[in-house]
Amino acid sequence: MTAVDQGVWAAPGRINLIGEHTDYCDGFVLPFALPQRTVVTAERLDRPEWSVTSTLTGETVTFDLSEPVTGWAAYVAAVVWVLREAGHEVPGARLSIDSDVPGGAGLSSSAALECAVLSALADLGGLDIPVEQRPSLAQRAENAYVGVPCGIMDQSASTLCREGHALFLDCRSLATEQIPLDLAGQGLAILVIDSRAPHQLVDGEYAARRAACERAAELLGVPALRDAVLDDLSRLDDELLIRRSRHVITENARVLDTIALLREGRLREIGPLMTASHASMRDDFEITVPEVDEAVDTALAAGAYGARMTGGGFGGCVLALVEAEKAATVAEAVTTAFAARGFNPPATFLALPSPGAHRLS
Image (cartoon, rainbow, N blue to C red):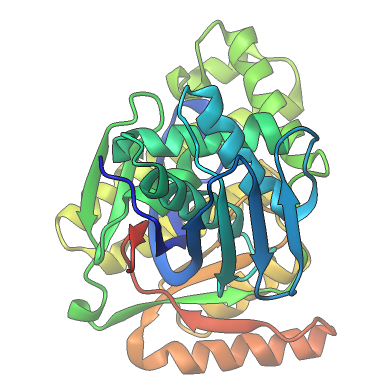
């Protein structure tokens, strides 16, 4: 692969249509990429140093990996570190980061940053890294350097998604399939409702959910909860582990049922599966907050076919499957309901299945 001296690269945020907290259980997920993206403008340097500027804050961080990097720049340093760990000669670089992926909304702003930087450094260094291997590298960067025990879904979506499709990912085999998602062709839209409730994953709650799932799998004698069935839960005597496991088992089934409907073009019929997913996250996995529950309930009352929280939980976004012509009405109903509850005003936009990481120029 021929190295380049400079360029502009982009990687998108993502929405997960269904399949939450299944990825680290070797399960199934169905995300698609958003038009919102992180853009990295980069040029190669002739020394092993990296200078990163955020156009959003004006802050510049320079590092050479001799000391740990913290804050937002840690995600950039993590990519440099993981590429070096994998044996690649990573070129020094000057990078400028811009993004319209909302931070703290559960739309994978961190994965978008990692994957955009990885794409830039790979091209600047002429590194031979097949695209299908890049999600694993970005995931390891976040796990091992940043310290977030995320699964591989976010990085896979940000790298591998195609326009007009959702990405069916088997998180064990890493096999993928592009599932057509022609919303406009059926007069539908996916309305994203950013609850504006802070979304934090490094505070221990995400790690606690993952640890519970791993403990349950260990007690059941299976490699991961992907291999368990509901009847197995009678062998657990810890009510918390039963509820956590039940969410994962039923959520994997909902992903497969959703894909079956999408393959047949029955988009409206996935609505009840979305709503059931939310109920499972609320009651069994306990990762919702009042703002997202209100958004789901109000969207359904206003005519949505289905609605669910997307992302790791404890805040973030809700997505609602609606008739395109009713999207504004549903958004207005949620805004009104939030005001009545004294919540911060939500932000809303329509999600369009978009392409994954690529070079712009």
